[in-house]
Length: 275
Image (cartoon, rainbow, N blue to C red):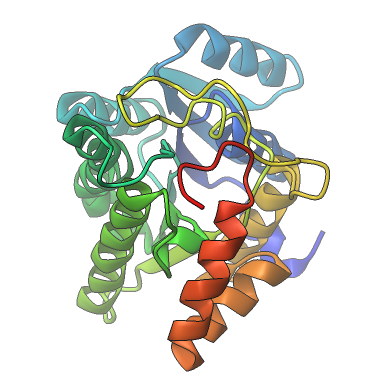
């Protein structure tokens, strides 16, 4: 264990979207470092199963049913954390939902829902956790995407919500430059999670299938290790995967070229909404 990771011992970590995918992997990764965990998601049964498993090996875990589109649920998540542990050191805004449809076809309720989950969920949780994070000079993390650095065709609502998250978190960072608050944006590339299966189509129904071959994707566990290490080292932004790093760099240097490359790349998906 590195010196930086040793510093995580005893920290209180709040994770949203913790019942599956990256959020679940983060829960297990943090459990290795003597942290106290507060895990939130809508699926309370899965949260309780995770908590039971980890508690059996001595990890302190508090499961809290949380729909991040509800401001009162987000407030309750923070209040439960403070009631149980008395402080919050790390908040990870991980809950998210994706979509797959062209803007001309999509029902606006789909984009509204993505903003409610991906952007407002981050705002709500951060708003109520911030006073406690300032006390501990803690960390606020947004689990984002390459789509937050460059618009992805067929993912207009997803990109918009992640761009909004970025703007919010970057502003929060600047406002608290002298307060010791650590703000980190973590942007995985394509990751093998159920987010793609539950991604919303034009009418708001889940697509129920992955449009991509997952064998070469990052695993949630790989992503979680990178995020936890980044928090321990108080990194600013983490862009994961070779494709992601290249696309973000190219967007700044050759924006027209990357537009065309992304169009071609996304058009190759099976049953792509555009060609």
